Length: 310
Image (cartoon, rainbow, N blue to C red; front, side):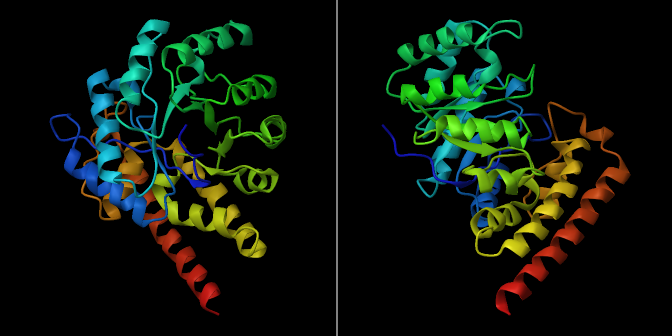
């Protein structure tokens, strides 16, 4: 059994593409370095931000393998990439992802039962996967697409009791639900990572292990500061939380193209190309929003530096 995943920031990685639409591995290597330099504690590859529903299985496997190789043990890597409906196809996908050397293979919660099916169906399908993909550490991602399936505290406890799960990317965006989930898995190796910016600080106070959301593609270092320093600098933590909560609304404005534009401005040489959204429809005002966000984020960083040094 691999060691527990570390607490902290697990960005949901975007995938750079070339002008022809293939994965741009040169840009991806520089993106990995950007994540590491800005305070990431782990990398979540082959997820919805990575446009996994628009990648072939071969591309998903190659993407996970590349991230593992370039991270080179400096920080752990987890990956999802199972998007099929049939259980046997999912087993093949998960086995292929596991073979890349990732530290955990992340199950997409809505792949294990249809919208109208109950938790017993989910458990049976999970057991089928656990039996056929042995000796692998798993995570769970409450992916919003094609529908969002949130795990109940009871089902989450069942996952924890198997001893095979160590990571939950929680997307409920509800403090009370997270409180119940955290209580259900207390004492187990299963950790909850909040994907929602506005509830992050409250979830940390309840025992959440960190953040795993799309906004780590914009100002990862501020999330890292909040997660690591909220106990020692409560006043600053409140201010950072207020900033992160409000600016997270930019997620609704043409993601992931706007995140790629931000990364461009931050020095990562990737194109705006996306398989999810037509990058030519990225409006001038949406670009301006990202440019203004960069100015505002720089101001917040400078204020942080002055507070730390004083």
